[in-house]
Image 1 (tube, one colour):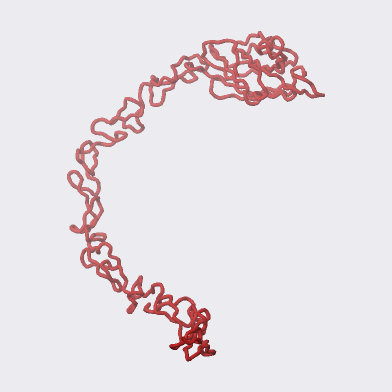
Image 2 (cartoon, rainbow, N blue to C red):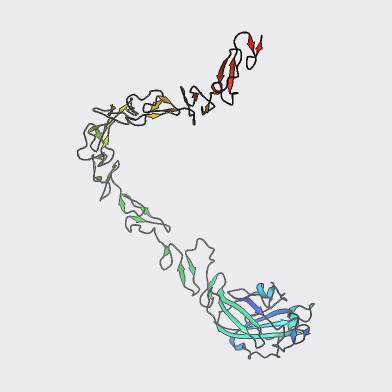
Length: 454
């Protein structure tokens, strides 16, 4: 929302004012009249509201609120005056004016804030003219306060006897380039990246991070940087003097080529525990480690050479991949009882277990493959449900004499009960599915029952 300020000056400080909430529930002016039409005892229309704000020193404090009296619009506002545009209804809730009063003098601390709300009766006249000529006063608030320089907002509110409520926040801060309790101390721009200090609102100098001293001209070295072995030219640095090293220059530099040694003074090579030799590069193996079968890369180790194992490398190692075997010398694989194969990984099955239809996963075991059964897996498995038959191969059902059907569960004796065959033919009993019987004709006869002579 645009606001017209009464004057433009070179700024040393700013008084910020936020109107955060305003309500006029009765839609009336200060004299109790409706802003629009009246319906019974209630006012229908909202007021066409605009605000006039006056900021002045305490000697300009006016009397308490008087409902029918208007402040002369030409009354001097020594710190500044502002008049807003007309605020629509939505603006009364979330788009109220934000005001900046710039000043170029020493901030006195005390101030008088006068806030007026007006109803505009002429939509063609600018709000400033309305306040003088034809506007109708809704309310007038005035409050005297003391405020120190700072960034924190102060919350306050004003309430009229007709229920008009205004909430607002304010603060006063120094403009860029000014500091001090009254914004009278001139300071360099905070955007100056080369500056080593900033001005505080109190007017004192505060060294920027990394600088100390009365003039903020001494850099603060990296935390922990040794006071004599290290130095810095810029904040956060730590340059080491000759013979010293480390982030904080607290570590002496050992003799050139020293591998696992340290120093108490520069260019020494005092071996660490577990290391030996002129340059401390020879590790000391674990006590008892076999001198030829073991070795070490680091102190206290005992690493075994190929074919040997154990804590001290004095036990032979079996052939890689040996599963159930042992050794008497490196890289052997002598099978334990019940195991066979080059890696002793194949179990020896139970004696007599069929080599083709049986197998095992551990020694002295005999597991049958699908379709076979029996202790030695040498018996075929007949077709499931086969009753009066046998098998030669898995899943067969070969019927015994006198039986028929898929499962050999149907008697096949039709010829014994009734022999329909004629002329000396042979009767063979069949299952019901196969027709019950079959006549085998002698020479010279044909037909189902051998009844036709050829």
